[in-house]
Amino acid sequence: MAYRLVVADLDGTARSRRFGVTPGVRRAVAAARASGVRVCVATGRMWRSAAPWVHRLGADAPVILYNGGQLFDFDRGRVLHDRRLPADSARQALAVIRRHPEVQPHLFLNDRVYVERRHPLTDAYAEDDGLEYEVVTAFEPLLTEDPHKVLVTGEPEKLEILGSAAKGTGLSARVVRSEATKLEFLPPGVSKATALRVMLEALGVEAEEVIAVGDNWNDLELIEAAGLGVAMGDAPEGVRARADHVCGTADEEGFRQVLERFILG
Image 1 (cartoon, helix red, strand yellow):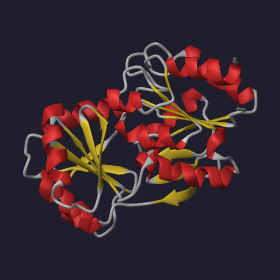
Image 2 (tube, helix red, strand yellow; image 1 turned 135 degrees about the vertical axis):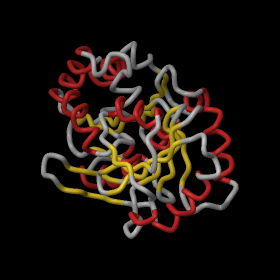
Image 3 (cartoon, rainbow, N blue to C red; image 1 turned 120 degrees about the horizontal axis):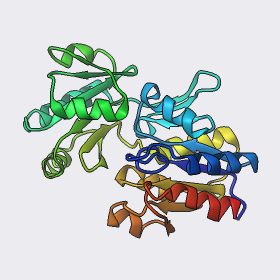
């Protein structure tokens, strides 16, 4: 199969949390692009925090943001696709989250991040993602508009409890783990795979011509939607089991390995 498009998750996939975007990964991306293959990013981040890493990687437009909530052509400054969490669903999600005071919710609205209290969990998240956030008295006055998502940080076992509780309420939102310490409430039916379908139509590429690479549950639909779905070596077992191929970890430059084997080899 001659692949025409590679779509990769950012954190824990194209970007190592320990080493960032390594020179080896950058060289492989440049070589893939020079061969005529487009390399794009699919991330849970908003553009403001994704941009430095997308540019450092040397990736092509468009980029999938908010775990599928938005498709953004950064070359032209155009939003190609935008799906938001209905404000009523966000209110319902926040009501469930507030029953678990040991976790920290973050509201994403119009490329800004809001919290109701300062918290070490937010500081750690903001430092890792290069985010600035605003502390507000309450989220509700902001919900005159639909947000992109609500992201919750916390200890893995606390998020497991919250996720189970949320799914048991009939909440009109997609609840997904993006990392061990992050749980996200997304618009119903939204995933990186739904944004991929819009991307493929815009680019004139078939799903069979795509390699998708990711490391967590929020990447699973993307991995399954591609002609070749690849899981990183440290992805959850359930993700690795449903991938077509498993590569090394981000610290081991697993994404470089994928490009060298399936594009450059």
